[in-house]
Image (tube, rainbow, N blue to C red):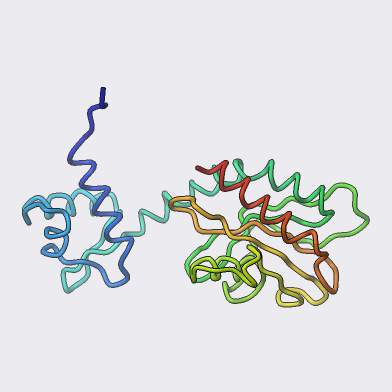
Length: 214
């Protein structure tokens, strides 16, 4: 037996998804056509979403995602971090390097979970909350490679050296198949090059985290 659902809530969520998929916003007419409902319904949906700051309309009348969505999004990070920690701990202990989960935040990569190994004499200090451009570092480049539909060398992971910290190398693999989450799992270590076994191990960890988030 199919559970009863709210048609109005469904339409409101569809409005948010449509607006999230565009950079320039949508007009009431465009939303009406995409939803297959009349303009009056769209006006009511937008007015309700505006009251909760989930939608805003510019001077030209185009609707865009509102800042209220960011407040909701911040609450996702603790849940994602909790789901990722077991795989990150295993990765850090296995490799002997600092492991991290990085998510996209605008045009930047944001480290939301970091686990340091317990048995090494030294390791890279890498803290949750650390930000860097997507174009620099293994974590961001792995995400950009996934956006482009591929990965460096088709191996499933990206390697970098000295891009975020002198003398440090990184390996990262993008999260794949997780709806609404764009990110990567990686390690950073003080080394001139990443050992051969690290890349595949990072890919496995990214797969574990993706499975935990589905």
